[in-house]
Structures are given as C-alpha cells and as structure tokens.
Length: 239
Image (tube, rainbow, N blue to C red; front, side):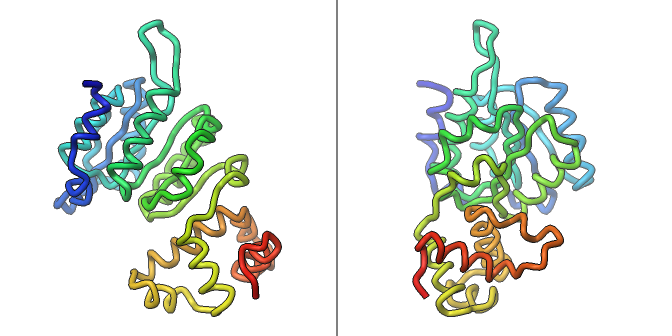
C-alpha cells in the first residue's frame, strides 16, 4: 500500500476532530529541512506559543495528520525523487488527499512554482478550509500574511490562478443573497446558520474568485457593488 493511500483508510469522521490543545499546532511538509525549520521559526513570530513540526516527505505528513489535525498545514509542492530531480507530483497528490479527507484543514502552499496548482483549480474552488498560496521568491512577510489568511479561513491565490477559479453552488447562493436580496454579512450568517466570520469569508472568497480583491487597495469602489456588477456582467446573477 502506498504511504499516501493511508489517508484513504483513515475515517473521514476523524478529520473533523481538531486538536483539543489551546496551543496552536502547525505542520510543515517540506523536503529541505533547513527551509522547514525556518518556516516553523517564522510561524512562531506569528504565534510564539505554537507547537510546530517539520517533516520532509508527504508520507511523514500523512502520519502526522493521522495523529492530530493542525491549525495550519504548510505544504511545498516539489519534492526530490529517487533520481535526484524535483517533482510536483507528490505535493499535488498530497493536496488531493487532504482536500478529500480533511476538507476544512487550513493550508498554506509555499512553493517556487505556484502555476502547478492549475491542475487542482476545481478542487481549490470547492475547498472549505482556508487556502493560501505564497511564492518562495516573495518576502517572508508574504509568508506570514499567507499563513494568517489561511488560518482565518480565507482564500488567497496568485492573480494568474484567479481567472481560472470556478464558482461553487454555495458561491452562487451567496451572490444571490448579496445582489438580489442585499443582505449584510450578519444577515447572510443568520440565513445560512453560520458564524459572522464564516459569512465574511464567503464574501472574501467571492472577491478572489471574481478577481476584484485588488479593489480594496485604496480605490474608491464599494466591494459589494463591484461583486454584483462583475457577477451581472458574467451573467452569474440576474437582477
């Protein structure tokens, strides 16, 4: 049995059981030990009391997931092969398994090749947990910002991937509540029986998927109006 297939034998119910400790738990899956340890050190800047484990293979990451659900998983995409080359296949396969069996765990993909994620756009579009992508060529501040976004349940991807993001049925429901019923975030939360923070994340994800998140940067544009205008232009809602 492939080590990654261990996830398939792990009961999905267990995936819903978060760690009981009040101390944040972070898991870093990175094949360069120095980079993995550095990632843990930067996560401790954000959360000094955290517990952080760094492992160097997807298989070891699977074993850690089986032992407890972290508050954040940091995943590299490329791992070394027997032949000495780097391959994104193990990282992509690991993400697929996490998407299926741990649908709400928060993920930060920290990679030098974010475009490999195009293969997973349908799964990312439907994913329920926080999901952020940070290029290793960016400043470390971007790493911390991506970690914070993921932990808060937000969606943060590079603009070259935004245009390929797909709207889920839930996204279309949120669009209807926003644009046809003009509901506030709190009213959406009450209608959908979720927390206010979750409702706010739903709206934030729409901004990302419709590629209007950049309008928040000092531009005098109401984000809700931009969401609805963009959705109407794409015939996603009829007002």
